[in-house]
Image 1 (cartoon, rainbow, N blue to C red):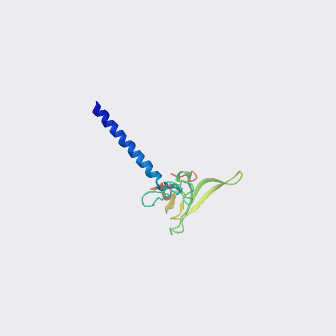
Image 2 (image 1 turned 90 degrees about the vertical axis):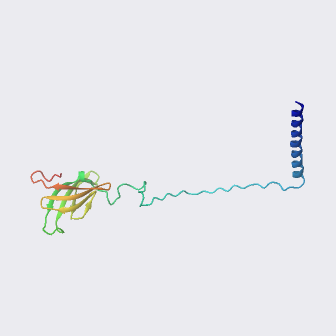
Image 3 (image 1 turned 30 degrees about the vertical axis):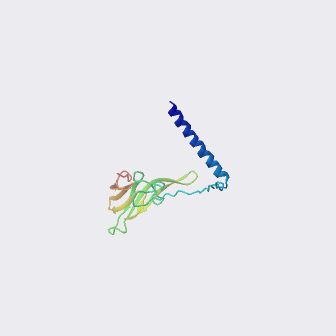
Length: 156
């Protein structure tokens, strides 16, 4: 037991001597520790969404150019057919729009081959039917408007 006490006493003496030597050297002329200055830097995080990998989640799904009546809202009102496809015109009814307070006007579109309204592009105009491409968020499907002789021009 005395060896343990002697070892502990020697360790304590060494630790005390090291502390006294360190405080003596600090008093002899060591320069004081320098103060550290903290500088605040504000960085703005910028998000970039490349078009080739994925779409920007903050951009609207429907552009203003694509806005308009959808296929389900359109009905075929009439066809002005010509043997020259560039001269044929189709009349599509797209519901009613407010012109002024309380005044509603029917919205009629006069379209030729290749023109677009809403999500519908006119592909071919025939004497009794119109073939269109309907774009549903990137999925394009062909549909047909049939001219109904007795029922006033409903669509299918």
